[in-house]
Image 1 (cartoon, rainbow, N blue to C red):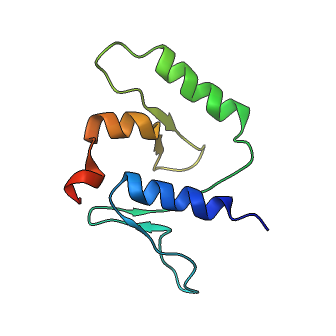
Image 2: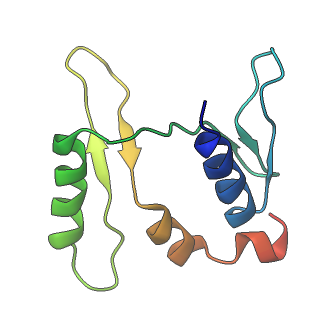
Length: 100
């Protein structure tokens, strides 16, 4: 079994100034920071419609603005907001350096 997903969790934790919680057998996030609990899903490939929609958001985004993808499922009231981690870091950058 590949440990790639663990490496991804460690990388995200380091980038966002948190720590990987790991499998504890209890309901815990994959990565915990002072300001967020983060669930990470590592896949060999993401759905093409999803990556294509994010690419479209980036392509259509004006300079100086934040490209966001909002996903809505029919019949649900709440929606998901998707963004690239690099954009998140640009807007909220240096989180690992300030220990947030």
